[in-house]
Image 1: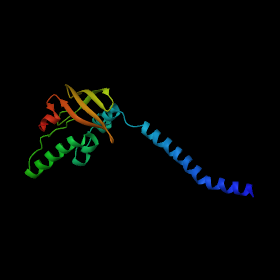
Image 2: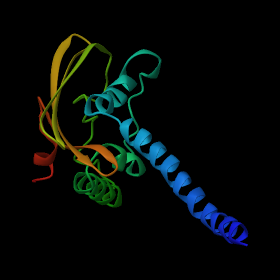
Image 3: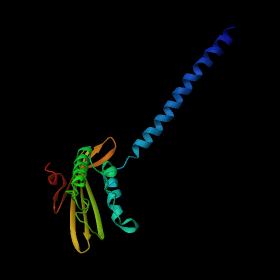
Length: 166
């Protein structure tokens, strides 16, 4: 009789043990996925890699894509300006590509250096040649829940936030 009762108690505990094991396994996958998050350098490489080689078109800069690259605040400024300019039948203030500070490009000699002075903040220095002109772009990056995003771009023609008076 005692053996029968003990066996029933063990069977009742099985679903709990299965749940614990499943939670541990799931936790390992989450930690593994979390450990593979994109670095600030990889984020910039994903942007600037689209200007060289087979992908020379640059990243999309339509309103739907802005959130992939910019902080929500900066994306909202760019989108509001674009929408207002379209309603007036005018060109938006950002009428070139902010990543390379140009409307046309043939990029070569691309180099990306990233400094992270403290967790969640980084500065990217991107140098390249556009046709024959040497350029340097500085990008202020913030780490958000979605990943790294650009808080500002400083180019030879000026800062992106400054363009919008911010």
